[in-house]
Amino acid sequence: DAKTTQPTSMDCAEGRAANLPCNHSTISGNEYVYWYRQIHSQGPQYIIHGLKNNETNEMASLIITEDRKSSTLILPHATLRDTAVYYCIVRESGDDKIIFGKGTRLHILP
Amino acid sequence: SQTIHQWPATLVQPVGSPLSLECTVEGTSNPNLYWYRQAAGRGLQLLFYSVGIGQISSEVPQNLSASRPQDRQFILSSKKLLLSDSGFYLCAWSEPDLNTLAKNIQYFGAGTRLSVL
Image (cartoon, rainbow over all chains, first blue to last red; front, side, top):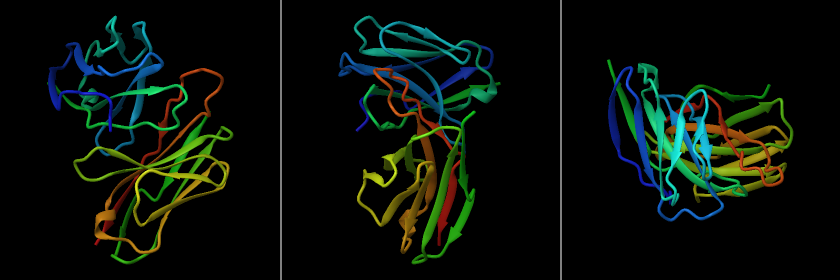
C-alpha cells in the first residue's frame, strides 16, 4: 500500500501557482519524498525528490515540513500542459521499487 | 543519453491468445527494470521488477510472466490472455543503487495499450 495521502483532485487557474499537498505521517528517517506526474496516456515523469530540505529544479519546488510528515509540490506558474495526475511517493534509497498511490488529478483551468 | 523503447504502442488481442510485450533500454548498463499495469481509471500497479539478468521479482500473482534474457531487455508475456488483462502496460528503468545515493529515479516508456476482446 502507498504510504502517502493526497487529495483526489484539484483545480488551478492558468498562470497561478499550483500547490499540491501530500501527507506522509509514517515516513521514516531514511525515506525520501518523490514526486512524479502522469499526463493522460503517457508514462509517468519524474519531477523532484527530497529528504529534509526544500528542493527546487526547473520543473517545481518541493517544500517538506520540519517534522517531515507532509510536503507540498509547487508548480510556480501553471500552464495547461501541467494538467496531469501527480503522485507523491516515499521510499528508502535501497528500495528497488516504487509503489504508486492514486495521486491527485490536477486540472489547470484557462 | 539513455532511452527506453516499448512496443507495440497499441495491441488488440482475443481472449486466450498469447502475449509478448518487449521493452529495451539503451545508454546504460545493468539497469533495474520494471513492468507496471494501469487499468482504465485506476492507479499504477507494479507487476514485475528485475535487478539483473535472469532475476525476476513478481509482485502480483496472475497469468502474466516476465523474463530478462539480456541486460537491457525486459519481456512481459502471457500464454492465454484474459479480459481482465486489458490495460495500459508501462515499462520503466532506473540506475542501480550506487552507494547511498537516493536517486533511484524511474524513467518510463511510452506504454502499450492492450485491449483483450
